[in-house]
Length: 66
Image 1: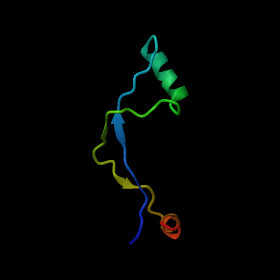
Image 2: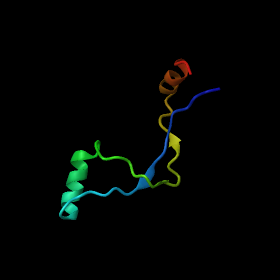
Image 3: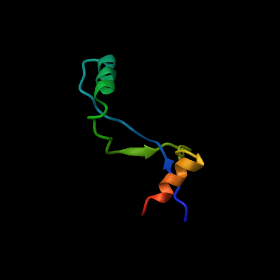
C-alpha cells in the first residue's frame, strides 16, 4: 500500500463585522488565521489532486510509520 499526499478545496461563507466591503476584505486578509472555517461548506468540483508527484517527496510520506 502506497500513501499519496492529496489536497482538495472547500468553499463557503464567513460573516465579518465591518462598515463596508473593502473594510471586510481588509479585516479578513489581516485576520484569516483567526477566523473559523464555515460551518456550512461544499467541496469544489474537480479540486481533488495530488499535493505533489515528486517521487522523493512522496517517499517521505511512506517512510513514516502509520
